Image 1 (cartoon, helix red, strand yellow):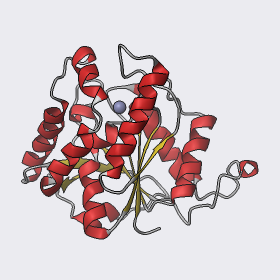
Image 2 (tube, helix red, strand yellow):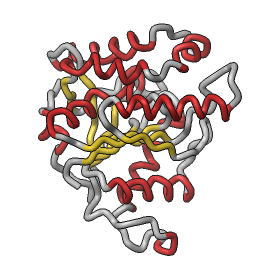
Image 3 (cartoon, protein in one colour):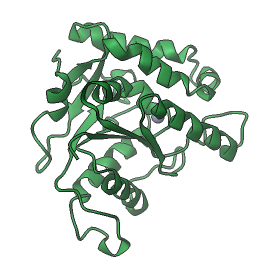
Image 4 (cartoon, protein in one colour):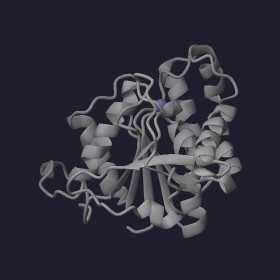
Length: 252
Ligand SMILES: [Zn+2]
């Protein structure tokens, strides 16, 4: 459908870090129906709570964050550090795509700081290709095929760099200056992660970290806050910048 966007990212708070400003704008300015999916419930995101306990907390946080913009949260129930491109994950994401019928899909950069993100990226890329193919796992009734491959975009990698520390410049940026406080409000719903990030990543004030990276992209794009994206432009994927048409693409 024209006004449906789906973000499929690895962990429950990734969308709020990487692309929530864009989701907010599409919802507010163009009435988009927003879906946010995580591949896992974030079961390793605690040093104190058992996997099933922290998973339940984080599913709730993901749903609460999405609800800020009237969006739906989906958990695909893979497990942290175990996201792998393969039949099971591809079937799950394809099934979700056929249920949601998005015109635009957002996922992780193919190069990112951890393998869960990189594997999610290839799974989503493959699912976007599979979702319009009627014979793909036809015996499993994955749902109504998409009319065509949706527009696929990669968010910035974490800290804008690949695993070797090299900068990955965005293809274009979306101005999120006017919605940065709502983006922070969504991220703040992931309260369980503040303590975890402090302990494991040595990163306090995760709201500030999100704002800092959006400010860095904003500075490059000539606005206060921005989010960076690259479009998947391989053969058979849509070539026009639909996201840029909706929200205005800022080039660096
Ligand atoms: Zn993540």
